[in-house]
Amino acid sequence: MDSGKTVDGMDPQQRTWNEFVRSVNEFIRSGDLEGLEEKEVKFKLKLGCEFAAAREAVLNEAEDWIDRLKVGLAPQKGHPMTWQMTDNLKKWGARSPDAALKALQALWTKNDLPVAERIRAFSDQLPQSVIRGPGTRIRAISTLLMGLDAKQYPPFAINTFENAYKQTGYDLPKKNADETALYEHALGFLDCFIKEARAHGVTLRHRLDMQSVIWEFRGEKLAKLPVLGLGPQPHQPKTLQEALADELFLPVDFLKRIESLLEDKKQIIFQGPPGTGKTYVARALAQCLAGSEGQVTLVQFHPSYAYEDFVRGFRPTLVNGQAGFELRDGPLLQAAEQARTDPDAEHYLVIDEINRGNLAKVFGELYFLLEYRDEKIRLQYQKEGEEDFSLPKNLYIIGTMNTADRSIALVDLALRRRFYFVEFHPDKEPVKNVLRRWLQEKPPGMEWVAACVDLANERLSDDRHAAIGPSYFMKDGLDEADVRRIWEHSVLPYIEERLFGDDDRLGEFDLDTLREQASGGAESEGQ
Image (spheres, rainbow, N blue to C red):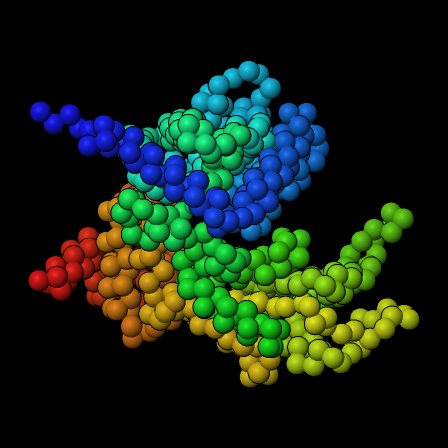
């Protein structure tokens, strides 16, 4: 009878544990994980201290509790949460401070509650619209739990832990496990690994030590280990650009090309149809390159936006109880002053919907400075004794432009000469396959959405600016009900507007029809 043991008397799982722990030990001693303490453990302990400070502010209901929370949520290399998660949490706190405060108090309470109860209490109050999907939600929640004790409650990432489970033969969590079950399973794994590692002479002080090993010991390193048998896994990004490329599902070479264009001309415009991620990429790239949210200024142009709003102008005010006017700097001068006083850092001005404003009127004499950064010019509203103005060399401008809106004009040639332009279009790389790449990283069964969007765009090819962008569907926890709601209430009204006067074609864009035809085409190609 087969006992399930190998010739050396070990069961397969024990052998796998032995080999994995031995390989980790060899890796550590070889120096390949040199700097793990500094790179992973100390960084996460520091982050835990930032959340601990936010916890105290939350529990005491201090006036600056949101600001304390934002310190821990600030995007930085190696942060356990993605930029989108931190941004959504900050927006939730600003939009619904009472609800967010109550939820955080439930998670961070000083009552002696098990971690499972804390997670459930917080998750019940965290809207799905802020963060969706158990794996994504527990990644955010576990990061916040570091405010209790980072050594005992380290951050969790579902793909990283599942790879480790498979490598060691450890049981996978149950299918459809919720946030609490996923995290408790991970903590059990860490405890088991610490015990096994100690038996093999590898000292791991606490769960954060073990989590940091797992976090670093993956990707190409993991694929090189003996007896593992898995193909190469996604490796830990080595640069901020690589991390951002993974998050945006864009090639890192594309982001580096944008960076080189910015370095050359200092200003750039992303142009394309709606839903292609122009604004999202602009903001994310600006924060990545600047290194701090405080070094990025966001402004949106609109038809009534004027020079006085953007650069400087007289604004209504009360002086000694009397109505009057005072000269105020707009976002451009504010960003320029911040960049000038911080010359060693890069500062970014992101202008959303740049072509919605009357650009010649909004920019005024700034047209000249966009081309001649070394020059100075007298402003339209210049204070007495003030020096002429120049644009700092460390202030970069990223604009976005919607090419599908027929109600607004394209930018004039004078501005085109001063900006580089990068096209974001669903029928061209790198945007072309963003949705497909994104869906492949999510729970299976939703890849058909990308096929439907591609087919619909083929049928809109006579007006390429009418193409449907991927951002409509790039939502965590996307399911079929979400797709139908988005299609019916966002995509179809947009298509109807583009096809105004040609109602006979609307039937071509019925979601079920597209899905059936796209599926049939895929089957034919596979035969």
